[in-house]
Image 1: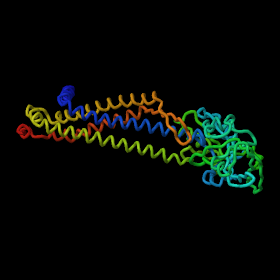
Image 2: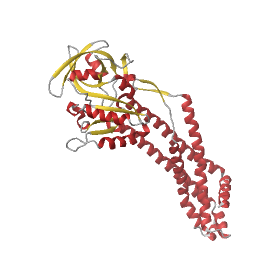
Image 3: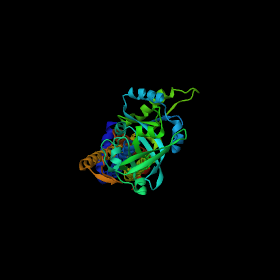
Image 4: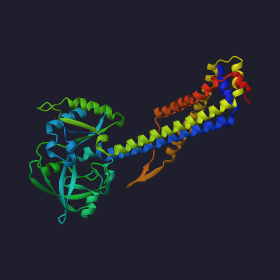
Amino acid sequence: MFSVLNLAIRNLRRYKRRTLLTSVLITLGVVAVLLFVSVSGSFKAMMIGQITDSMLGHLQVHRKGYLASIDSLPLDRNLKGKQVAEVKEILEGNDAVEAYSMRIKLGAMFSNFSETTNIRLNAVNPKQEMQTVPMLTDRIIKGKKEGLLEKGEILVPELIAKGMKVKIGDTIVLVATNKDGSVNGQPFVVRGILEGISGPGGRDGLIHLDDARTLLRIEDREISEISIRLKSMGRMNEVLDQLKDRLGSIKDKMGKPVFEVHTWEKLSPFFNIAEMIDLMTFFIKIMLVAIVLVSIMNVMIMAVYERINEIGTMAAIGTVPGKILSLFMVEGFLLGVFGTLIGVVISLITIAGMNTAKISFDFGRQKGLLLSPTIALNDVVTVACIVIAISVLASLQPAWKAARMDPITALRHV
């Protein structure tokens, strides 16, 4: 085997131009894929962070059936005080949970004393909410950010603030119907204006949790949802399974599950965009495979035609077809390894350079977002293995052709 390897290296060195051109093509393919994976992965992680850290959290717990009717914000499907206590006990005993926030979601009429419109509201405990979605304050485009809000204050979504012409410090009235059908109104002072973002909750206003209980005349400590922030996003599915297992064992009097748990992926339409990014990455990898396949096969076919006399001589002196086959396949393998190694080195240097340069961009009103491309070791290994494997497979057909060549015919070839 060592002799075959040594001979393959000598052959590649003999045809330097062909070896160099093929290696460059493979290198360019590897660099293109790794850079695309790192940059798209960074963009995807940044966007997921914007969604989870400014609005949704990583996981949410609701009463069974609440999410199916969330558009109507049903108050009769809120979690009761005893159920909330059970969830809190489980969350506080889970070392993967960093923070959680209790919320009441409700619909109300928003009036500036001259006009009235509908508004969706999230009622929150400010301290819990800022721990669970720490980027929420970044969405406040006007008004004081410290402490989020106090009792009697409201953060108004930008669209409603513009349409109703309300400003910081204005007094407005919220009128809401509780689950028994009675109506109640309460004045609020506009503390700030919230930037709208896509998806559920993007147009919601914020009020204090105690104000919502007063407005809705809720006596029990019931809530609509519990938003959860994890210490590590990578443990999301693990924690989801744990919560489903623990909460799924809690049944109502009818023997049906009381709770349902969902990840941010089930709650936001952005997950579809994230899947599109993954799909684009997959197709880029397919393009890499095609480039490598065509490049290696073309080189090896040309190598066979250029070395017909050499192949005939090898066969004539007793070299078995298997050894000729392995010679050409080893050459393809070496081309793949050489091109891949150079491509990986260039990619890692480029990624490090991009991080050092601190490239920033604007996304909507988000200014100076920092692009931090990273590449996971498993992505590098996967791409490298694919390229090398394809290099070997692309060499198979030309190698098979060389191994089956008749020695006398080959020696006569001019």
